[in-house]
Structure formats: structure tokens, C-alpha cells
Image 1 (cartoon, one colour):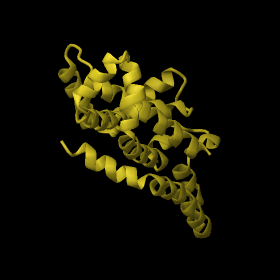
Image 2 (image 1 turned 90 degrees about the vertical axis):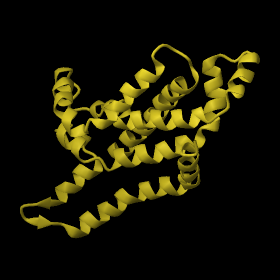
Image 3 (image 1 turned 90 degrees about the horizontal axis):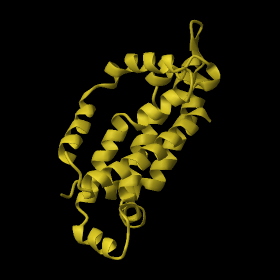
Length: 206
């Protein structure tokens, strides 16, 4: 349940934040737009291992280290979210400007244009980012290992390590747990594979 809950929150949050930011960078004119986007992209060059200790100290000072907050919000706002912004921006740029102008003439605000027009057209992007975000959060081992100390908060990858101790490995239990850990990923990809392939193709079209 912990893994499913965390992966779902990260997936929904990443898609929501990234799609809004991607729409803003692609369609809304504001000062230093391109410069800010380049600064945002430069964050992808910083490995997560470099920031994990300062982030742990900061979350500890706030009293959020041994909570699921440390596994959700930093991922949404981190490299996963930056990649999502890039993905949505590249997709929204390919949508003709005339569509925005027609919506504006009909009285749509930028928010309504995003919600009623752009986001439904960006469903292939949503499917693509959902698979990446869910997969990365579901199989993340390092972050729960560092941030969590309470066993009741553990996710599947950390819990599976408990089947191995100094006395050996309970292979039958470990293999059963591995099957359970793999099934949700296969289900998500099975339902989203057509949109996933379409999204990868369309975002690389330009």
C-alpha cells in the first residue's frame, strides 16, 4: 500500500505540475521565459546523489524526514518534474497558435484554455509521463532507505531487502514479493502503452 500510495501521488502530482508549467513555457509570454527554462533544464544535470544529503538535513530540520512527504514532494519538484516540463513544453509548442487565439476570442482565460483544450490534447504526454513517474517512484530504493526509519512506512523495494539476512535468503518469499512488485508496473504499461508510444512519437516530431 505504501508503494502504491506514494507512486500514485508522485504520478498525479508530477503530471499536474509539469503540464501547467509546460503550458506556461510554451504558450504564455512573460519576461525571461527562455532563460528561466534553460535554468530549469540545467537542474537535470545535477545527479540526485549530490542533493540527497542536503535535502535529508533540510527535511530533518523541518521534521519531515521519516514521513512519506520526503518521498513525494521532492520527486514531483525534482528531476522527474523537470523532465515532465520539458516533455509538455515540446508537445504544446507543436500545437498551432491559432488554436489559442480562437479560444481567446471565444472568451477563454489562459487557465480555461489549458484545462479544456490543451490538456485533453496532451493526453499522450500524460500517459508517457505517468509511466515514467510511476515506474521510477515504484522501484525507488535509495530514497526510502535514507529518509525512512519506521518499518510501517517502508516501500516494497526496501521491504524486499528484509527477506535477506545473515542467516541467508528466503528465496520463495523473495520471488513471490518480486512478482507482486512487478505486476502493477505491467498493468500500468498495458493500459497506457498506445498513448505512451504516441506521446514519445509526437513530442519528438518537431
